[in-house]
Amino acid sequence: MHEMKTVIMAGGRGTRISSIASDIPKPMIKIDGKPVLEHEIICLREQGYRDIIITVSHLGQVIMDYFGDGSSLGVKIEYFFEEEPLGTAGALYRISDKLSDDFLLLNADAIFDVDFNRFTAYHREKGGFVTLFTHPNSHPYDSGLILADKEGLVEKWLTKEDKRPQWYQNRVNAGLHVISKKLLMETSQLANAGKVDLDRQLLKPLAGTGKMFCYDSPEYVKDMGTPDRYESVCSDFMEGRVSAKNLRNMQKAVFLDRDGTINKYVGFLRSINDFELLEGVADAIKIMNSLGYLVIVATNQPVIARGEVTVKELLEIHCKMETLLGLEGAYLDAVYYCPHHPHKGYEGEIAELKTECCCRKPKPGMLLNAAKDFNIDLGCSWMVGDGEIDVRAGIAAGCKTVLLGQNDRDFGQDATAENLLQFVKEHVCTEM
Image (cartoon, rainbow, N blue to C red):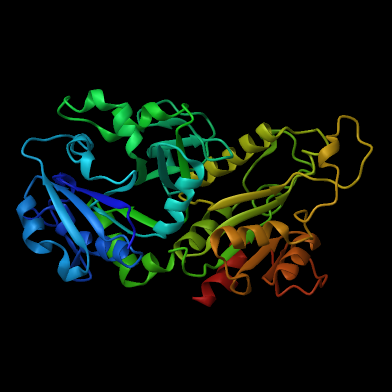
């Protein structure tokens, strides 16, 4: 059993989902015969998180009567009943003496199945006040966004109402947090403020301070706050998609080359203005998303070593790629790029990147790194690209491979396809 406490906020009224159940608290709405909150508690218990505090208010007695002290589920539950509304964080100050130095803070109305040990280990490694669980979704254009640097340090917290950049990474706050009690100590002036808003008063002000990190994960977390989302979550749960995405389980992935596979090939792409999605790519990626595959880009970018594109410019190009895909309801789980180039002698080149490396395709380094990061079963995964080096990298990593384009040359690949959508229809869909 972990010493870390878990606080579950179960005081919301659930007005958007009242048509499903208006006489019970939202966390008590059932999925596969059990309340959503029970599924959350079971997920925590199975990973050793058994010391739980539930904050309740509206119809809270229903929750307290159902779960009691938690012993029937093999956990210990305490309650904090909000006599008057304290907002989404006011209760934390009232129960601060019961909290561990770091604690999990979760919403009671989301269905999730995530590897909390992995999440909390990342928080301890970073040493910040807060770690947000972030993920891509199918509608980033109308979601709040988290902007972070390559180390995961949160630079900006954008609500739906805030002006956003033209191009952005599809990274959304999922509502799961690891929080250090130091945050409550530093903001103790809010303790007597009555209502305290978690996002607006505690978390958003931490952006840019060096004290908040994001933990990117493809694991399943969905708010079921509307009838449509509830139906979607029920379907995902019954078909096993919720549990399958937990990173304790081996994942399957489709690795995609970038130039000529996702976007139109223009030679060395040096300008963001030359980036244009190929027809059908977003539809293909959407299908892969829906079938539970991780979709991961693995691209050689020697333009970095050659001094023709800066890392900042490359990341902006990738933000454009994610924005355009997001507008069509598709998302990438990760992007890996190799900045190296072995041949020297270019004007303006970056000497330290002019080297033989393990990540430049046809070497499999990017795929192997992704497999380690996301617990991927490479033998059940695909490498898809429009060049021989993509196929060879896939074979070296142990993946199935596909060569795109009108091409009858044989590099030992498993299949050929004219474009990404054809590959998905002929190979990915038939595996399910």
